[in-house]
Amino acid sequence: MTGTSFGSDNHAGVHPDVLAAVVEANTGTVPAYGDDPVTAEAERLVRRHFGPTAEVFPVFNGTGANVVGLQAMLRSFESVICAESAHINVDECGAPERFLGSKLVDVPAPGGKLTVDLVDAARWGVGDPHHVQARVVSITQSTELGTVYSLDEIRALSAYAHERGMYLHLDGARIANAAVALGVELGELGSAVGVDVLSFGATKNGALGAEAVVVLRPELAASMHFVRKQAMQLASKMRFVSAQLVALLSDDLWRRNAANANAMAARLAAAVDGAAGVTVTDRVQANAVFALLDPRATAVLQQEFPFYVWNEATGQVRWMTSWATTEADVDAFAARIREVAAGFA
Image 1: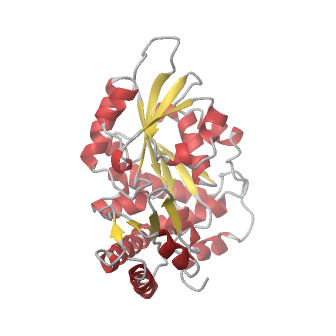
Image 2 (image 1 turned 45 degrees about the vertical axis):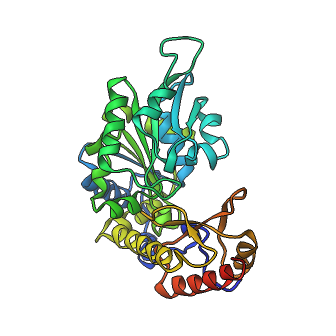
């Protein structure tokens, strides 16, 4: 393969400022397990964005963040209502159900987005001991289909959940991309819209391997230190995880990285939309482009530019951009898409 990967924003490297922060943290000796000044600074910065009462728990990866965050809200006979396409449902190898003992109730959701009506239809058997009891609504921002919940849409879901004694969880693996798409601050996607617990994604935004669980409802934080440890997500040398969060949350690096990823996705969609043999299937809101190609064209292109087939039955593919994607990368890929797709149109 000769071209830049458009398979995932996980394929990009680590932002130089993040690497520099890790190197800078690699001096002297400090207490382990988060009792260090770098982690204290990461916690301060997260609270600056999400509010002074936010409790912050750095972890290693997105699946761990989701499992740890959900466990703070659930008992084994309670369930999570999520979109059918949700990462916790499709791409975490059953980890939430395996480690939490709680059922995921997955709902077909157009565009990957839950609505109050969809959640309401999935919430039934309340008080009946024969049925799991719905306790958490989990949404992804931005979604696995590249769409973005508006602030009003999140408020509506949180109001519905809270009125029924439920919680709202937000998988924020790409929360930075969503915030940039909406033109809002990170904190506006937290307690301001009724989110109770969220996963703050850093890895896809230029980190080496760093995420955080942010608990926005204080009473849910009491067990988190124990839950994180039992879930094998407590880092001994936590300063190196925390240093990455500090780098991204300082001087708006998170915003610059996400803005580039989003802009490159928009550039790619504009360059190929309407070309012979190419149909962009969804409006690009964050850093994902979904399109229909002839499978033969896809096979040729994948020899040069890595990317994923999203739906083998329809020929839909997904192209992801990242903080590191350049205009030259996009233009070279788009030119090759137009050339190859036209040959099978």
